[in-house]
Each structure stands twice: as structure tokens, then as C-alpha cells.
Length: 286
Image 1 (spheres, one colour):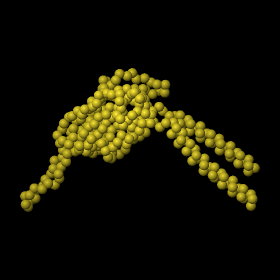
Image 2 (cartoon, rainbow, N blue to C red; image 1 turned 30 degrees about the vertical axis):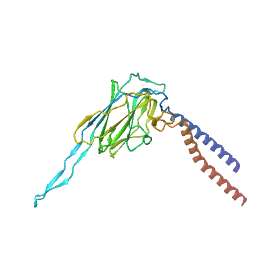
Image 3 (cartoon, helix red, strand yellow; image 1 turned 45 degrees about the vertical axis):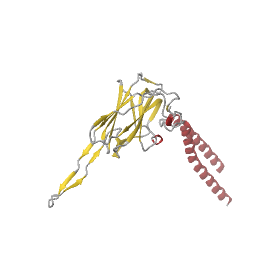
Image 4 (cartoon, rainbow, N blue to C red; image 1 turned 90 degrees about the vertical axis):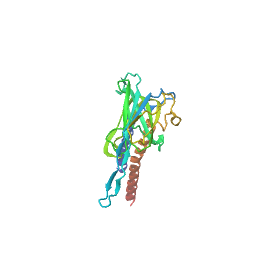
């Protein structure tokens, strides 16, 4: 009787294991999407122009006068806080949007990777901005900057003299951004959460800006390289390029995760079953 019960249990366990594997396989198929890839000979980098509207916040120093001596003393030194907008204009290329067999609208979109001079590109794991190209001749995206928090998307927190490097890539495909609203802190109230990107990317356009130290409003246009088919030396395009964070996890990664999960589930069950069987055999012997 006990052997029959054990046999039934093993059969049920085997069915459960098969069901788990089949369910995991369905999940794996659903999770495998085509990543953004950059071919060996990518299309030219986007044609970009940049304008910086510097409008610093100037807080003058304050003074007080000693009523007994008449001496004037400074109570606050004042400050000059950099503030303004970085406006990036991208020249659109003709493209007729269409719907693929999966119902995704395929169009051209632009992704931005932004880093301060103190970081390297491999520390930038996801784009700070992604926008579909507009229906006009140009697509314009504005990045406000300041030394404190702004309740605006794409805000950059800066200090005087800070150097930032931008990379822009045109992608033919589609993206589904993930946003998470969070209480304002550190200058941000919107962060990316597991966005999905798909398509074929162009070469990158890279440019650098320096935040002005001036206390006067000004407008400047930093130089931007002409469109090129060549990526920078630090980002040679391959399917596992760490400098192209748009790459999605390959299916093998999901398979490993599934196998580990199955092992975590099955091993404790096998151990418990073995212990119970040993206890029952011991009890019978007694």
C-alpha cells in the first residue's frame, strides 16, 4: 500500500515538473523580444544641432548694520546657481511608419545616453531619454538643468563648470517606456523602469557641453560632429556590446533563470520525500 502511495506521489510530482517546465517555456517565448542591434555598417548618425540657453539664478549677498558701531557685516554671501535649458534639434529622415505582424507600430525614435565627465559609458545602463521622431522636419527635445530639483522630465542636476557628454542614436523599430513616479528627491521625480526597446540602431552622434560659470544670461551653440557611419572607438558594435545598453537579455539567460527556479522548487521536495521515506522504513523496522 505504501509503495502504491509513493508511486502515485512520484507520478504527480513528475506531472507537476512537466507542467512547470511547459509554463516556463511559454513565459520564455513571451519574454524573448528582438533587441536593438547596431550592425557592423550602421546607418549614419543623426544630424544634430544643440543650443544652450543659460539663465542662472543669482541670489545677491545680504548685509546687516550694527546699530551701535555702524559697522556693516555680510550675513549671507549669496550664490550663483546655474540654470537653463539644453535644446537638442534632430533633423528627421523620411520614413513611413507601418504596423508589423505583432501589431507594433514601427517608426524612427531617438535615444539619448548622458553622462558626466566623472563616469564612463559602461556605467550608463539605460537611456535617459527616448522619443519618437515628430511629423515635422525636425524633432526637438529639451533638457532643463539646475542645481536643485525640477519637476520636469529629462531634468539634469548640475554644478558650475560641469562637463556632460551626450550620445544620440536613431533606431528604426518601437519602444515601450516604463516610468515610475516617485517623490522628488535629488532633482528627479521620474525614473525609467524596465523599458522595452526593439529595432536597428544607427551610429551614435556624440557631443559635449560645459555648464557656464557666468552670472549673466547667455546663449551658446556647442559644436556637434557631422553625421558619420562610425561609432566611437569605445563602442564597437557587437551583439554583446556593453556600451550599447539597449541590448536585451538573450534567451539563454532566461533559460538559466528558469532552470535555477525549477531546481529551487524540486530539490527541497526530493529531500523531504527522502527523509519521510527513511522515517517510515525506520518505523516499520522497529
